[in-house]
Structures are given as C-alpha cells and as structure tokens.
Amino acid sequence: VWIGDDAAVLGRVGGPLVCTTDCTVAGVHGDPRVIGLADFGWRALARAVSDVAAMGARCDGAVVAVAGPPDTDLATLYDGIVAAAAGHGCPVVGGDLSGAAQLVVVVTVAGHVDAPPGPVLRSGARAGDALFVTGPLGGAAAGLRWLSAGHDPPTGSDMARAAAAHRHPWARLDEGDAARRAGASAMIDVSDGLLLDLSRLADASGVGFVLDTVPVAGAATLEDALGGGEDYELVVAASDVGALCAAFAADGLRSPARIGTCVENVATRTLAGEPTEPVGWRHRWD
Amino acid sequence: VWIGDDAAVLGRVGGPLVCTTDCTVAGVHGDPRVIGLADFGWRALARAVSDVAAMGARCDGAVVAVAGPPDTDLATLYDGIVAAAAGHGCPVVGGDLSGAAQLVVVVTVAGHVDAPPGPVLRSGARAGDALFVTGPLGGAAAGLRWLSAGHDPPTGSDMARAAAAHRHPWARLDEGDAARRAGASAMIDVSDGLLLDLSRLADASGVGFVLDTVPVAGAATLEDALGGGEDYELVVAASDVGALCAAFAADGLRSPARIGTCVENVATRTLAGEPTEPVGWRHRWD
Image 1 (cartoon, one colour):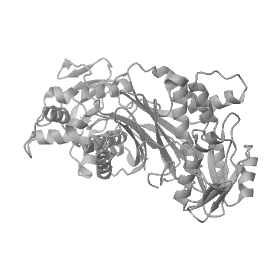
Image 2 (image 1 turned 135 degrees about the vertical axis):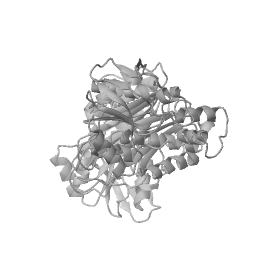
Image 3 (image 1 turned 60 degrees about the horizontal axis):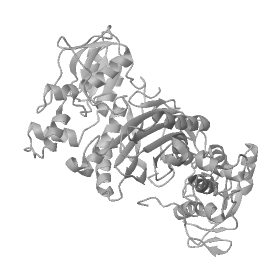
Image 4 (image 1 turned 90 degrees about the horizontal axis):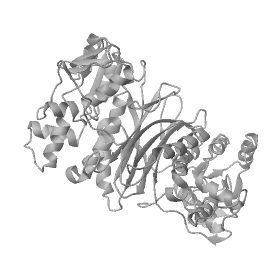
C-alpha cells in the first residue's frame, strides 16, 4: 500500500505491519499558547495513533521526533506525549530532537494486526455498504472555539466535554479493531472533517454516499460536525450491519451510529437529500 | 530498548522489528542553498537508514513527514528522497505534509533482522574487544567546507569524492548486516563525529578505548576524521577479529579498518597515547 491511506502496510513474517507518520506543527495543528504544551503533546501522539486505529490495527510503539526553538519546555511537552502513550497503550520507544524556528512534533507509530482479516483500507467500500461513525462529531471544533475565546467551561457541561475533545482526543483503537474483525469493508478517521474524510474514503473506493443524519456532539453545531475535524472518531463502511453492531456490543463499546449508505454513482454525495461539499481542514499542498 | 540507541527494538512475531526516526532541519543538518533540495532529501533518507544499518538490520520501508514553507519545491525534495530510497532498497511507503516556517524532514524507517543474532546495540562492547571502522572518515566534513566556499571540485579528485560524501552519503547496510552475523558486540554509525559517537558507544558499554590510528579520507584532515561527522561509516566492536574480517570478505565488502581496542577503565580514552575529547556535532539539548 502506497502513500495515501491512513498508514502504510508492510509485508511481514507473522502478519502485516502498519506504520503511520503525522506532523503536528505549532500554530497549524494546535496552539500551545491556548492549550499548553502538555495537551499539544497529547494531541500529537493521539493523532498518529488514530491512523493506526483507522486500519483496525494495534500499536507496537511510537517514535517521536521534535524540532523546536531552544526555549521549548520539553519536559512539559513530553509529559503530554507520554500520558497519551500510556493512555493508548502505545509506548514511546525512541526519538530524535533538533533545533528549529517553529515547534514541529512528528510521531510515527508502528502497529500490527494479529489475526485475519488484514488491515482495513479506505478503498474497500462497495455500493450498498452501510456507513457508520463511532461517536458524535463536532465537539473538538466547538471546544477549540471556546478555548480560543479564553472561556473556562463549567465542569460537567457539554462545553467542558467539547474542550476535552479538543485537548485530549482519544484514538478509537478498540472500535477499529472490532470493526475489522466484524468484516468492515473500509475505514477512515475523522481528522479533517466528516465530509472531507468521507469523500476521501468514497474517492478511494469508487463509490458515492447518501447520508441520512449525522450525530452532533452536545455543544457543537451541525457545521462543526460536518467540517470541524479533529474528533478522531472512525467512519466505518460495512456490508454486514448485524455483525458490526454485534462485535461492538460484545466488546462493550458504544454502538456505532448509522449515518447512511454507499451508492454506485460516485458523484452522488448527499445529506438529507441535499448535495454536500467536502468541507473540512485542507492541508497545505493537499 | 528505550530511547538512546540508534533505533528502537520492538518485540515482534517473526523476529525483532527496529524503528528509527531522524529530524533533518534546513540550516541545521544541511543547507539546501548549498547542496540543493534533492541532495538535502537524499541526506535526510540516508541519515535515517544509517541508524538501521548501525543495528545490523535491513529496511522494510520508510515514512517521510515534511513540514516547510509553502514555496518549497517538493518535487525536487522528493526526487532526492526517492533516489536515496531506491539506492538503499528502502521504499517510501507513506508520508505526511504540513506547512511550517522552516523546512523539517522527518524520516522514520522500520527494519528487521531476519535471523539470529538479534540487533546489535551500542551497549555490548567488552574490554578486549577490537574496534573497527568500515571506511575512511572526514570526507563529508571536508566536502562541506569546499561546497560552502562555492568551489566546484575537479571530477575524479579527492575533493570531488569528499563533496559526494557530503551530498550523497550511503548507509552501510551490508557492512552492518555482515558485522551482526559475525557476532559484533556493539555498533554505532558515525553521524556526529568519531570521537563523540565512539564515546557514546563506550559510555553505553561501560568501557574505555585505546585508539592506535584512524583512517582519514583523501581530502580531509585528521580533525575532520575525528570530529567532522556525517560520514555514516560504522564503528564496530568485536571480540572475534577473524570472524569479522572473514564475513566482510565473504560478502565482497571493503575490509574493516582496525582503529583500536576497548579497555576496562571507562576513563581511558586515548588516540596514539594522548587523551581525547569527545569532539563532534552536539545537537541542541544533547
């Protein structure tokens, strides 16, 4: 598998190895002045792990390269990276450090799938497959809006949960693994926005999609949910809806939310009957 | 194996996996204005592969993260990365791209050792082991000096070879593999300077060293050879000198050059009877 999926797949004795790398740049993918360096580090690790989750794989370990200004508080940055590594069961096993004008954290995660079926690619969805997401969307975008405005949301509120979704995203490793074992045909994580990431899955699979509804996080707007990104929930395509839901239930996971269906016409991309645009965060050079 | 060796070792079904990550920052680890973006890309790939070579491992593949200014000529940068990947038999299997103020290329390489013995660490050298390098040193430093002065060395000259050593370093994968199979006790690549890198090996192994002589590249000074770095030759410690030389000969490799011996007293670090300083390129935050 060449560049373009969430992670690379390398042939290996003992099962395929997956490997993914993710740049997190201060001011581009998170603002340490808003969330602090520890949460910036957490996000850098979780973003990379999410790409492994989107293959239905498990993490073997991460290597972390940091380039940044000499006055960077590395101890605090690493605290966040290591906390996320512990939380996700993905040990940091190596790293590199260099001076640079701007803080750049590159996390590379190696992972594997220990039993068939193999890693779930973006490209396997077929017309008729059902589409799911693993949780409500838009919380991270809403949380960032609050945090950027300097608000301190009340404990336990929807806004506090949204702020946490931005600060401390969780990669959906268990959900990805369950979906793979249940025979999911395609999968991608919602890093840049549902409509943009789903369009990538549809493009890679050569299908269109018809969305009925999208679950919106408590404090978020529908616009946040469709284009906000950074929620790191998974979009799953599956032909056997019963097997998917049963696998999630057997593992004690939140039920995946059905959002729509894949269709044969690649140009059909609708929500509630209306055409959609692939809105979301477009990386430079995309 | 935790942070601190050339590459991380992850336990894997089918043999240990090694994984290494390396930052190459424009203006810190190479100047694209001097050598061009293609050679900057070559160096970024070769530096990371060299860490795999220093474990005695083979490459499975690389993932490349690039952060840089929007006007970066990515096609030229990738040309160099892909040429080095082809030259080293290390396919680029994935990547990530982001905007940033300064060009940062992070190459992460996964590799493996396909038969015992396992990866060669820095920490296995014992008093009495012989020390070798896989080739003459200092060429890259001398070449950089010429290139930075704007010289265009005559084809076939020592200086031309030195310039090539800086522009197009080769990781010593075959030498590392041969040394591992021959039972090398410790290994490190000369990335920052012989005395500095050898000191790291000695520190990790709890030994001192007595150097007799160091092979100096054609256009280089002894100072270049001792502290210049970036030659990416390997330093090898081995108790069985005959087995090491036989393995190199059987594989058609240049004979390793004996430079000295490991000794019990950790504080003994001499060259031709004189004390040495661990000179070389010190990374920020080292």
